[in-house]
Length: 165
Image 1 (cartoon, helix red, strand yellow):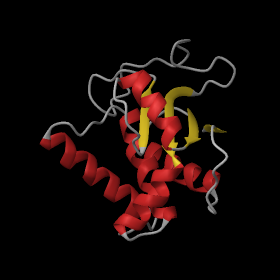
Image 2 (tube, one colour):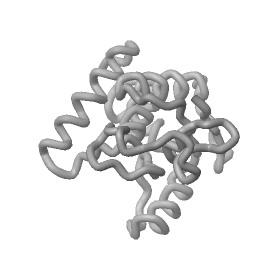
Image 3 (cartoon, one colour):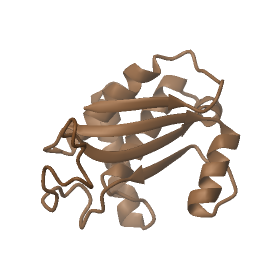
Image 4 (cartoon, helix red, strand yellow):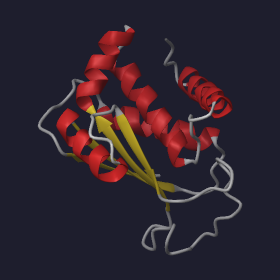
């Protein structure tokens, strides 16, 4: 697994960001039984940075907590059977890693939502990372059935790593 971290903001949290991201990304990859080594890019930004990305990519001129940009299109969430190792559009030719996608995390929201929900910033970062990773595997939460399935998976992944509410 390769995780590329980048910062678009001066803001920092007093957390071992790379450690938490690596732990949760690895947990989701294992939970989903992904047969490939994966490459994920993670960008840390703030309210203004994510607002601009949200506006430019989704036409929504508002900040959000996390954005996910999957590289692959799944017929069914978490179904890897349609992907072939070595496909230059989906696999890094230098490492052989599956280009899973990009995650954009809003550090301002990690702080404020941790306070709002009454848990730690560490737990909020873990939750948003798990949530975003599931999006990279093709899961969504627009319909009720999809939402409950995604929530179940998030809960099982986080509880498996000791992140309880």
